[in-house]
Each structure stands twice: as C-alpha cells, then as structure tokens.
Amino acid sequence: MECFDLAQTLECGQCFRWDLQPDGSYTGIAGGRMLNVSAENLTEVLKDPFWRRYFDFDLDYEKIRRELSRADPVLAEAARFAPGIRILNQDPWEALCSFILSQNNNIPRIRGIVARLCEQFGEETDGVRSFPEPAALRSLSEEDLAGVRCGFRARYLLDAARRVDSGRVDLCALRTVPVAQARETLMTIVGVGPKVADCTLLYGLHRLEAFPMDVWMKRAMKTLFPGRAPESFGRYAGIAQQYIFHYSRMNPQLFQKEA
DNA sequence: GCCCAGGGTGTTT
DNA sequence: AAACACCATGGG
Image (cartoon, rainbow, N blue to C red; front, side, top):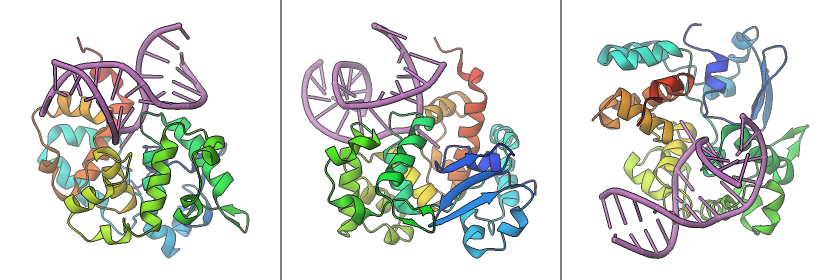
C-alpha cells in the first residue's frame, strides 16, 4: 500500500498517543481501544470498522495526491516526500484538547502532557486509559491540573471542558455546519485561535478543507507558495497542508537563508 | 543563561 | 492592523 505509511501518518504531528515500539510497530489508544499496529498486521487491523474509519481507509488518497500534484509542481514535490500520510479520524474533543495544549509548545512535551492528563483524569477500563471526557475536567481547578504541568494552558483546557460539557459548543454539530461558522464557534473558547480551531476541524472533525497555519506553514507558504491563499488548494487543502508541513519539517534547510 | 517550541491574549503603536 | 510582551515548562 503505497498510499498508507504508518510512520508518516502517526508521526506527522497530528496525533500524540502513538508510541513507536522497538520492533517498528506502533502502540496507541483511540476511542477507548488499544492497538498495536505494524505493516504486518495492518490488513487485519483494517477489517475492524472502527480502525478502518480511524485510519480513513475508505478515502482514495492516491487519487487526491494525483489531483493535488497535477495542479502544482511544488506541491507535487512535497507530496512525493511523504505519499503515505493520511488524515486520521480522531475524537473531536481529544483533538481540541491536544491542540490547545500544543500552543507555544513542542511535540515531545505535548505527548507527555497528554499522557499525564489521561493517567490522572482518564477512566481505565480493561487496562485501557481513555482520554478524559469534558465532564471529568469541567469541575476541576487550575491547581488540580498542576500535576499535568501544562502551564498557562490549564485555564484554556478548563474553559473548553465547560463550554463543551454545557453544550454551548456542540462538537458533533460542527461536522456539518459551514466550516467558517464551525471555526468561529470553536474560537469562542478561551485559548482557541485560528490555528487550534483549524487543527480541531481537520484532525478531529475531518473537515479536509481546513488549513492550519503554524510557524512552519507560514515559513513554507512564504518561501514555496508566495502570494498563494490556502483556499486555492481546494476542498482537500488540509491534506495539502499536511504534505507541506511534513516536507518543511523534514527539510528545514529550505528556510535557512533568512536575513 | 539563552532560545525555541504545530499560539493566543491583552496592550500599545 | 500590526507589533509587542507575556504566558509555564522543558529540551537543546
């Protein structure tokens, strides 16, 4: 399967609960299930409807990559660099929290914070530690979250928990409303700006037109696609964004000559 | 010690 | 609207 690479998909910065094992497989938790997945058992894993959907296996990434590549040679180069990336169908609430925690932070530390959050406040069933539900966080104080060591982001996490748990932000409804409106709704949460909102839309709600612009993407757009608007990439702009993000992080020398 | 990390908020020009 | 300090924390 050329259009599905586990390392590219699980290590491209969209998820934070998958661990590379010594044997090259990945162990992770999603939707209250634990999975060990590798190139060897992938076909078997994809027979399970939950994982099939999680890994977005029914979307034809080969075709999308061809379309995107045909439209732009630079994008074609970026896509060629990691043709096996897929956009996961993560839980919207977990994605929202993960990217709230991501702000002004680095990926290894985000992973640690998410792990501690699950360990301290997630429910354990059959040895699987779930991501804590909004109701489990709603009534906590910032001091209660001290052990998670997420710093100033604790306040943001709690505001998100309260708004989601109360229904003022209905994550499920955001799958179908116009994307601009969904974005605005997410941004009513304190600590959620354009970038975190777009990450939630893309990775949690599978709104593939969302185009998160972090520091890497800003550099990449200026250098590789000067003057080009994210919307110009079309309804799969989010997938284009993922190719560009990964390409940029793997080739930082592209941006060295700033002065 | 300094700088940066998949940013956002509040304040100042 | 654009620039800026500030926000906790940890790693290089």
